[in-house]
Length: 408
Ligand code: ZN
Ligand code: ZN
Image (cartoon, rainbow, N blue to C red; front, side, top):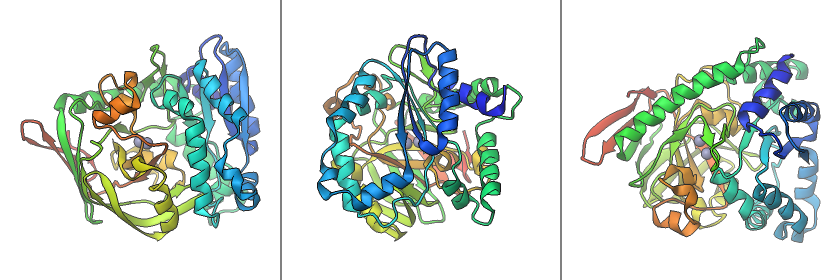
């Protein structure tokens, strides 16, 4: 089997872990059709009932956001809502191939993006809830496309940039072409599971992040919070991996329990724009002010999407010495950059981050301290000198991170 087929098989059999008779929805850019076909073949070989394609295209998305009639962004088509909600309701698996030009929507009116997200958020809420609570298996993974590769390797000619990005991705996802990727992933998931267990046993009350960028942020955690990471399980008990690669363990901050200042340590690609050189002031869980050198309007729009968009939904720990971080690359793609760095997310918290969370309604989760929103945006805060102190419920101070790496 070739290396690309091995990758497709990893995504289908370990990523979404397709079950005999199950439908698979693949969301892919048209540029990546050849790889989507490999995934479809792997899915049918594993007993998939039907592969359903949802195609995307950067250039058409840009044309639409620039030139479609303005009222388009206030209405999400019924048939598209039925597509997402319907396949999620019946328990299909969702594979998302994430490959985009990081600056595809540069210059688009942020108000159009916000309105499009709001109307989609309302229309496909059922799908989003089922996905966020792991009722359906889902997996996000990437392959290079030229516009993205040349942003990561600006000094290389097109072909060479593509090759370099492929090499970097294969290294990041532990594929060497020897057919051993699945075994390496099982071992890696065990490492992450051990970290999750360690953090859960500490029953921390809060975390305090400090570094020389100027970050000094205290994050209180819900009383019955849970750490998660590596492998997930659907409500019916089928294991899957939501992100390939994944190096993080994460939990949910207390909705109104975050205070201080936090500086981003990497640019953030969001809604087709790069947001860079930014920091946030946070009071009682709410982002009170943001300042960015680049893309401040996009960032402000992103945190104003709904009430929960200006509160935090995730705190994730990734050692500075993680394999992806050691590559020293800026991927301009959150799937990779978040796995090279400790990060936070504003917006929705994952229900699995609180005991029995997947069985709770949105209001119940909120009452237990979890944030809810139609958005969830990770941004990177880890540095080589990041210290994180944990405070236990009986008042002990525990070093969680020292100089960017796990101290536990
Ligand atoms: Zn994360
Ligand atoms: Zn996240």
